[in-house]
Image 1 (cartoon, rainbow, N blue to C red):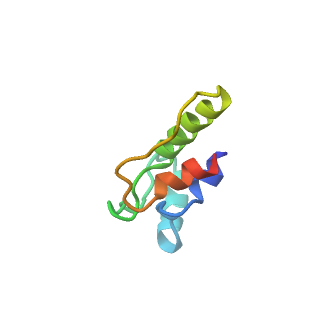
Image 2 (cartoon, rainbow, N blue to C red; image 1 turned 120 degrees about the horizontal axis):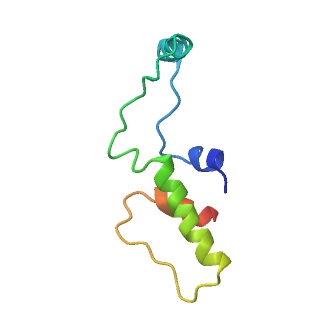
Length: 88
């Protein structure tokens, strides 16, 4: 599972569009290391791409090294992390 596939799963903050995208482009060309992004909603956007990458690495290492036992996830709100585990 690669970065793009993890990012495209439901529940991520979308890429900037319109005026925000233009402002980001102009500031990048001016040499500023700042970017406008949407503030994540705690109920809709449960975790970041980095956290999803950690989930995928953990699951794929368990599968690659044939770790015995079952996989369980507790405290699932709307199944976004379960989607990552399902894709591995």
